[in-house]
Image (cartoon, rainbow, N blue to C red; front, side):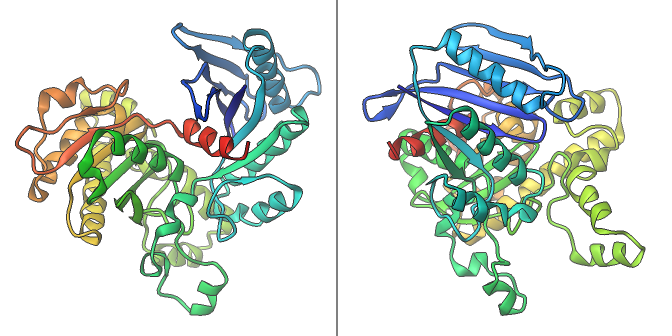
Amino acid sequence: MSILSVNAGSSSLKFALYPIEGKGIGEAEVTGNIEGLEPSGQPRISFCTMGQNKASAAVVVKPAQDVFDAALATLKGLLATRFAHLQVQAIAHRVVHGGGYFSSSVRVTPEVLTQLATLNALAPLHQPHNLAGIEAFAESFPNVAQIACFDTAFHRTLSPLETTFAIDRQLTEQGVRRYGFHGLSYQYVTQVLQRESPRSAGRTVMAHLGNGASVCATTQHQSRATTMGFSALDGLMMGTRSGALDPGVLLYLMEQGWGHDQIQKLLYKQSGLLGVSGESADMRTLRASSALGSEPARFATDLFAHRVVREVGALSACIGGLDVLTFTGGIGEHDAVLRQQVGDALAYLGVQMDVARNKKAIGDSVCSIHADNSAVEVWVVPTDEGRVAAQDALAFL
């Protein structure tokens, strides 16, 4: 028996197959990604099975066939031919926004899908694709439970002081409030920290840094403050998203004749590392460009680090200090330069980095990177959102 975790996006489909072992979830038998699912894309599947090297192959798209349907058929064929011994009992879907409707995972019904569709405007780059993925999988796996697992659910412990905007209270009552995101990642990292660090029950700040980026502060392993808010735009600058922005900028753009679609494209797709550098949204590309002398690339990476330092400091103030700092996400797990920049800037909070340990941390294992005399523990924890979703799905079985 197994659980299939999936994350359907606008141009990719991430998946992982977890065996059910007793009352828990075992190590993933296969993890992978199907990219190139955008219109006129050239989809390709890449996957890695336990203990084996990565493999990849083109996805065959038949004439008039929807590209996502072709990808789903390829995935189903992979499971049937190489993992037939693991019968899929449930499919756990990562869904970005649960709004005020759902504070925990839920089994999907038509009514649930209808409710979730009303939240599309809050996460336009993610939510519609998440829901389309659920519908496609439900059709392809008609007798398998579909479980929606929400990135907002981890933040259900936020207080009204954290969730309330200083706007007309009637809007607040309509659901215009802060929700927080990356909850599945934070839930996984929290589980790891409980195992690795007794101090993590105290004042912990986790930084999920990738193409999407946010910071979350916890005490007693519960969310107390986070940088993302009503939408996945708030807080840190990201790969192509602006992060926190003076709303007066938007009023100014509207006065200059900018329309909704133009502003949305700016905030979601033309800002962040890409917008500031004018070169790329990929931190690795910008590091290489900076090494060759690109001043815009260097400034973009420095600004990214500065914003992380700024938000970690703010969230630490909300929880009265800092005992544990953790990095996760694609950038957080792999970019030692960024971690060193942030750690050095947070020395006033008691952070002392071990340069050698930090350089050795390449995102393939859980490791501490603080100096022995550091007042604050610093960890790198490779995230596994799929495992958390599979655990939640198992609870429904």
